[in-house]
Image 1: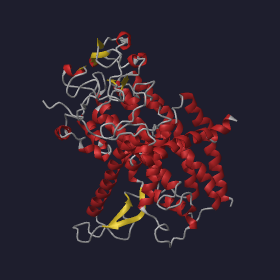
Image 2: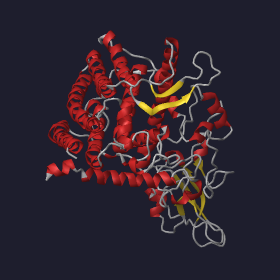
Image 3: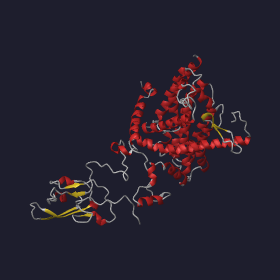
Image 4: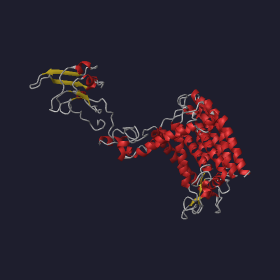
Length: 169
Length: 389
């Protein structure tokens, strides 16, 4: 029987058929821009084409607001306590017309953050998320310290993303 | 060469010979880098990724200034538009410009000679390969000396062309063994010994499988064989059976002869560092590389000419069902030959992406226990079909 299998290589033919099938699938979909949504290959052509991130991708920490524009955070300090690298600093405060405590300061030191998502898991009020941002490199160290104030760099909106460029020095 | 009626002087013969050799060499030097590029792409596609998609991003080197400007403008450099195709130029430039290191204890003479032997054996074979059975075109009348002379589809038409091809192709193993021995290193030596054993073993079924076309066509000249086998005028209809079996046996042995996957024991990366060319770098390595791909083209040419119908459309002598008076598909064409070569080169890459490497004893088993008996039976079958019916 093994003699027959060597002489008539069904296994080899099966393997070739499988790889040929995948070749055909990728070959006919790879370079067509119109069907970008149904691509068969896993390569991400990042700078030219937007990256398809997984739904649970862990990007930068972001504070959320509710429908009235109120900060959802109630300063329970769960995230601050659970953070392994201690990058979150919260200062508790009061605000008129709001029963729960209000974060006067919410500082996030991104340079030491390990993006473990413990803070989001520990939050009982769903007031923070990790967004889908990964182009977080900056030229200055100060840009990694993110607070509630600041021009383009605060806890509520995504970080400003530079074009994918190199240093012009 | 002057097989045609036009008489040629010695000067004309020499000049036409040089022109034809240059034409073949240029075609090879175009196909080989494109094959390496296709190898990246095909294996990439089969592994559900994209292969090489760009040649961009370098801040130094030849394309550096242009890339810096394009990145500065916020754009991805221009060369990436061609989907990585310029990589084959970059590959060649890298091989040429890289430092050529010769190990201190290497035998310098033999170390230099080995890649030359390899590449000569691989390229010399093309002298007898016929790309078109006859005159492809005539040189323009207005040209001096060679005006009006025929440009043949082959460099020479030796009447024992197949013997020449097989003999010269076997010389290639000397390049591997000598280069490995001269490197004065253990991994190359192990790789080359494996390679020598493998090539010598597989030479037998390769030649036996090529005897089937010889027997059926009754000739040894490349051109006559390919024409007789593809048109199938004098061929028994049953001859398709030994030709079909012979094709697969020949292709298997061709993989072994060119040291390609799944028979690439000579350069098994996981066991021997890089096999026989571990100590080689720069253009000497490039010559080995070139020889391997040129050998692939030779194997493809032979398989095309003797089994797949050569310069005609249909393989295995099925061309006899198409009348020769049909406009395009009835006659021979250079493009049919070329397309079939490209198809077999694709099969080389396809197999490389699919099959794992054979173990050494399995390799010898397949060669001696299965392929040689199979080819002998096949040859016997062909002999019966040729002489009994």
